[in-house]
Length: 284
Ligand SMILES: Cc1cc2nc3c(=O)[nH]c(=O)nc-3n(C[C@H](O)[C@H](O)[C@H](O)COP(=O)(O)OP(=O)(O)OC[C@H]3O[C@@H](n4cnc5c(N)ncnc54)[C@H](O)[C@@H]3O)c2cc1C
Image 1 (cartoon, rainbow, N blue to C red):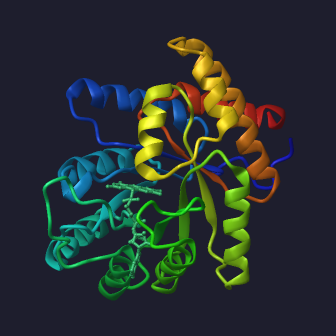
Image 2 (image 1 turned 90 degrees about the vertical axis):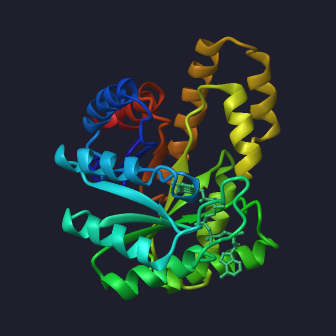
Image 3 (image 1 turned 60 degrees about the horizontal axis):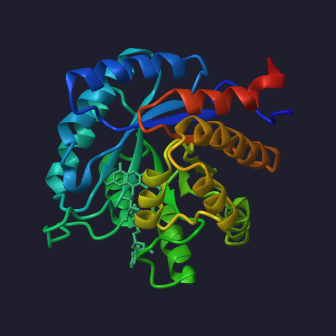
């Protein structure tokens, strides 16, 4: 295949902050393997309601020291303006200039949203406080956010984030390429010109994928679900099939103008590496 862009910086990779010393050393090894693909950045998630705030920060600083740009996720639900200001300034002090700005979800049992209700308010606040310092990425939902009132309002709400100053969007993962192409066409129609980067979830584990997809509203097409069901507990077969299917999806996205790919790695290197190497195969 011929890639429309230099292979360097075609990819970005998402991690969650490790919970243990063992997890931390595993993540270092994962990062070293993925660094070979010359990613644009590594991003680090932010636990619901700020539960991983310190660990996200520590992980981001460690990544930045390796010479690859690190992008912390920052969710505003349950946050105060002061707590967001504090963390933004801490990132500025360390020259961390990319950020993934999100509303996030309230942890179960927590009732109050805090001083921010939606991600567009966070983007606006970041711009007010720090001007153009941050390169702000926001979330996009080609298959519609699960809590959206309807598809039109969800799109209008996405546009609010762009109007507030987002520089790029990363989508929720999907396996229906058409949903991405339709979303991108809608953006074009509404004058949205920021890059819309597909979020890619490698398929490695059947039950985990079904659980996640139920929660975040990602559709698993019938043909894919039915085929995955046939593999039962055979993880090796699921892995092999997943690499084939997701490589084909990624290839189609790139051939049709996707500006890059953002991988939800789940802190594992092998499936993501295999997919990226399939994509780059004929380039090397
Ligand atoms: C790339 C990516 C990374 C993510 N990283 C994390 C992470 O690190 N930590 C985490 O906890 N979660 C993460 N999530 C999940 C995300 O936090 C949830 O999907 C959350 O429910 C919505 O966040 P958002 O920023 O998209 O919210 P918003 O854009 O605020 O949208 C949330 C809902 O509110 C509606 N809405 C938005 N604005 C308005 C408005 N002004 N008025 C009325 N309705 C509105 C939207 O239609 C939507 O239904 C990530 C998702 C993606 C796609």
